[in-house]
Every structure is written in C-alpha cells, then in structure tokens.
Length: 250
Length: 250
DNA sequence: GAGTGGTCTAGACCACGGT
DNA sequence: CCGTGGTCTAGACCACTCA
Image (cartoon, rainbow over all chains, first blue to last red; front, side, top):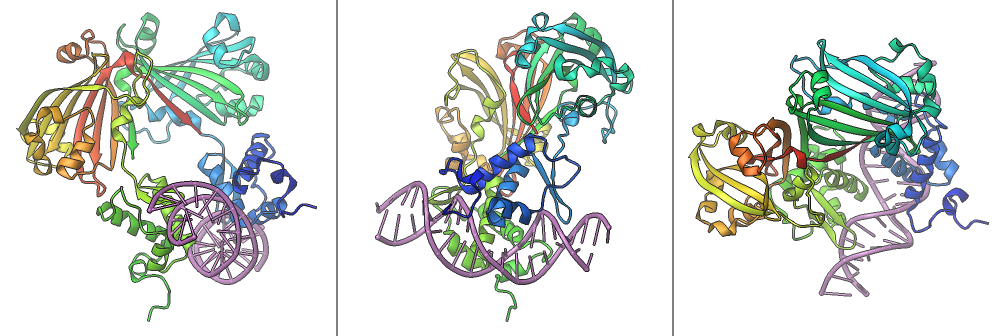
C-alpha cells in the first residue's frame, strides 16, 4: 500500500520534518516511557533501522541527536544505552572549596527537617511543582570538612514520593536522586537552575556561618522526569565568597 | 605513488585519528590563519572534498564538528562561512534590567579613562595577556536608562592595539570588538569568563550606585584570537541584585 | 537556472567489548 | 569469535539562495 518503505509510525507524522527528526521524536518518546532501562542496551542499530524501515545512516543521525541531547550514551562494541543523569554533582560547577581535593568526593549531608506540608503554606515551591496539594519539605545542611557550606530546602509532591516519609532518616544520604529512583521509582532526567544573589538574612547567616548581609548565592532548581513532569523543587544557598564559576564562549 | 586517495597533508598526520578528525584540524588551522573572511563563503563542499581527496560525507562530518565548535556557519543554498563571534552581547546572559525591553538594545558606554601603562603596574592584567610589556588600560561605565550598572576595566597589549590610542574617544562606542577588528585587524574568536562574588569597596559602590559591602558580581574575561593568542583582559563588575543566570542541565 | 548545503540510501570495512 | 558501534565511500534527489 505505502509508497514509501518507512514505517506507518513515521509516515503518520508531519511529513515536512526530515525522516531522522521524526525518528528522533519517536525514540525520545520511547525513552521517556521508561521502555528501556539504563542497564541494558537498546536494540542494535541494524535492528532498529529495519524496524522503522530506514537506512542505518538515518537511524544513526537520529540517535546522534539524542546523544547530543543527553538522552543516550553509545559504547562502541557494547551498545546504546539510556543515560542516567548525574545531577547530584552539578553544584561543584558553582563552588570552590578551601581544602584542595574536590576529586569525586561528595559533601556530607545533615537533615534538619522532614515534614509534609500543605501547598498553600509554601506557594513558591508548589508553583514549581505544578500544583500538587501536599508537599514533602526537607531542609538539610551540606558540610565540607565538618563545616557547613550549603543550605538546602527541597520540595517534593507527596503523591509519588510518600515512601520517603517512611524511610529511616539515615537512609537519606548526600545523594538523593538515586534514592528517588530506588524508593519511589522516579527518575530525574533534566533540570533548570536559576542563580541569583542576595544578602544573608539572620537564619541563613547562622546556617552558613557568615555575617548578616554578606553575599549569598541562591540556586533554584526545577528537576523534571523524562516526560517533563516536575519532580522536585530545590533551593540551595551558599556563601558568596565560596562561589566561583567558569564559562567558555565561542 | 600514494596508496590512498587522500591528500599528503592528511596522510602526514597521526594516522590513528580518523580522517574527518585530521581534516577538521587542518580546516581549523586554515580558519585561524584568517585565510577566509567571514563575509565570503568557503569553497563548496564538493570542491574541498576533491581537494583533500575525501568523500563529501567525510568532509561534511569534519565541517559539522567545526560548526559545533562555533567556528563555522552553514547556510543552505548560500555556502559555508567563518563565524563572527558575538561576544559583546554575552553580558546579557548574566544580568537582568529593571526596564523591560532588553531586545537587541546595547547599553550606553562612558569612557572614564584611557592610558598606556607598564605591565609591572598592573600585574593581574599582564598575566592574563601573556607578558606584554606595555598595556593599554581603559575604564568605562556602562549605562542603562542613564543609570550606571556595569563598571569595566579593560587591558590590551599595546603592540597590536596602539592605533586605539590615536582614535577620538567618541569612536570607542559600546561595542569594542568590531573596533578591534577594523582599527587593529584583531579578531576576537573565543573567550573564557570567571565569575566571583565580592563586596563593593568604596570606589565600586560609588560607580554602581550601591552601598559599600553590597554584593557585587565580578566577571573576569580572557579573550583570544583564533590561534589562542590572548588579546584582551577585562573585568566587569555589576550589582549583585541585578544578577540573574539560568542553566539547563541534562 | 545554476550552485549551494541538506537528506537519504546502500554497502564495505574497521575497532572495540564481551564470551 | 561474534555482535556492537565507528568510519568512509558513492551517488541520487531535495530545498534553498541568489543573480
């Protein structure tokens, strides 16, 4: 029937888009659906190419786009894998630490608070989470060499994250995203961060061990699942004198 | 004689690198040499491909890499062009402005100082410029709605930039890089920026119209020619309460 | 309409990873 | 050793720009 060899899925899409772009969209949706685990390879290039009735070259172009978008990882000789995000390390981009070695180390974490709260009582976070009614609120302090250097407030929608409230508090280590995945089945795939600069209020000054009015960097992060559902809202505050960021421009 | 169809230039390079990577290196050097102006297209794909004895596909892969690196721009139907950097706009990534419309507008600029100075008297800048002996020092204030919002110190090596000292000061408009190109023949191709946060000292507070000790962002920029020769050192200071930056993470 | 880059195909061969 | 992704080729056709 079809005059083209490509699959009905691709023919049904906007024909003005190139084949590889339509293919990339389809694959993005399949990845977002969780069909493939990060621990097992996707079907081989040649398999997928014949499945969709396109040449290997076209399939490769679609996949390369997903690699550039950070969705996939290709390992020669092994296969193509869904990429696990590494967002817990991202704060290292913004801060430097007095004691030399930053190598792979993760700051300690001390949980100060864990409670459920009505959205109305925390509208700022609720807005970022797309109107959940019940939130989990976590406050924690991150330490380096036993000195506090980052203060965090974290908001999660209660509905998929309720199991976190049952957990022993010691099980909430410094890296939360693997816990979200294991305990709640929620995978953080991407995030946006907004940086601003404020002056420390009394509470922040006490937490970060600086004077009131000292410069403080505030990083507001909105984290999303593969399908762009908001999963977590987070505000991290750090001392301005420990802030350092480098950009390359072309 | 040669057993391969590819050109001697490529065969003479490290054979462990893929052809397209060697080709990309060669093209990078030709671009850096200034052989092609941003105003005229490079030779066509097919021409370059036969010149180097590679297939069009391989040439395209090399060129795509240079596009990703920000060195080239491709325009369908027209040609491939050396890209002109747009670094003068980069400050807009970091600051927001009270008055709405940021569209394409450029802040005004008021030159406060222009002098030549010995490197020893400004070691910080001299270090960034790779040991020039004589520097040009420019201080200027950038204004938005007639209100000062950024204070800049700019250092240039005297040797290629001497013509700037002869220029009428009104010819140093808000955008310096086009002036560098026209008057001194120097093209800024890339830059690194380092952000830190300080508290305003008396002089900065006066310039930026804020109180002493208020948070101030300092952006130190090192700008380079295509061949990575340091061309300009620049420090821009702005009020912390006008700072705003957004990052996406994958 | 001539010339440019963009898409798509088909197939050969190579380099690497695991068994 | 087999299967994976990586490189490279050759050529057809399309979409766009510009004189």
